[in-house]
Amino acid sequence: MRNPFCFLRHALGVSAATLALASLAFSAQAETRVTYKSAAAGTSYYLMGVELSEAVRKGTDDAIILASEESQGSVQNVMEVLARQGNYVFTSPSALIEQAMAGEGDFAERPHLRFQEIRGLFPLPPMTMHFVLAGDKGDINFSALEGKHILIGRGTFSAREATRYLGLFDLDEGVRIADAAINSGPDALKNGQIDGFVTASAYPSPGVIEAAGSLPISLVSLTDEQVEQTGALRQLIPGGTYPGVNNDVQTTSLPVIAYTTTAMDDETAYTLTRTFWERLDAMAEEAPWWSSITPDMLANMTGMLHPGALRYYQEAGIEVPDALR
Image (cartoon, rainbow, N blue to C red; front, side):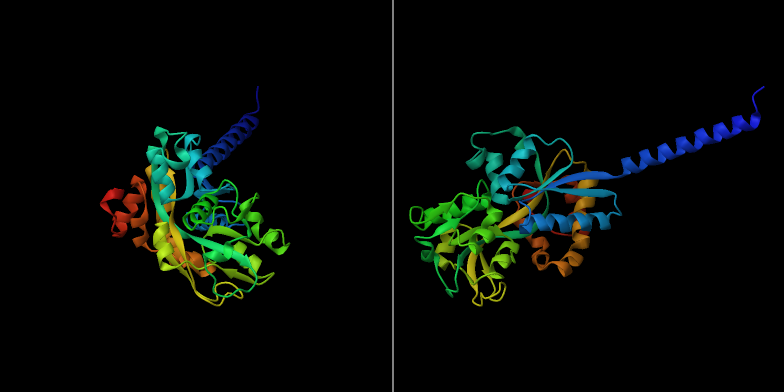
């Protein structure tokens, strides 16, 4: 006859194992993983992704894990909407989303209905154009780039904007372009391989800080007429933002938004948006670029808000433009 105590121990062991497995399954189910794609490693937007991931982890008690992935830029981020199936958050200038939805610009050869599924979550620090030259030249204008060897990046939105500006100001044939990745700019400048580089980055830009910490640099200022000609927003970089650059620099910026798609469920979008705004002050204490964010920046968004994000803004009493609803 089977020992009843052996049977009891076996039954209890099975129950404990079952409970443990159930607990693990529940834990795995309770944790939501979200892919976050922004920019190349070492750039301001990549660092923001790391900071945002930590803020979301703390703000949700690990219920949402935001996993940062390196990207070659905003165009790639938007293009990956076509392949991503799960929770996907990416950064992009609003202007690029407008192009994707219209099948224009970088998306003219690959128009797709899935671009219509893009939805907004919350604003990020604007993408500020930095035209950096080696040497302490003081307050310089765009003509200072003529005859120079400049790195503008490869295959990025930053490179496309830099190329557009060179064309607008009749320097498209007066500047020699270096064929290299955007994050190699500071090292190439320090090594004397280039005369300058262009980066579209939130300020203060880590790459510009790195360059200014190694050699004297100058930043190009645009005139009021040139700013208007670009169609972008006027942006002032205060003197002292970068070592050795004591003059105010007038340049341009483009709104940047954290986007997702309709594949994300409403609750996840709601929680991400709520956590972002609740942790914003804490993030700004650690990194100054977050201090520029205000709810008014939603007006710069192209497309519609995700329903989960819209629910948060309505609960928080934040005014949302009708076009985003």
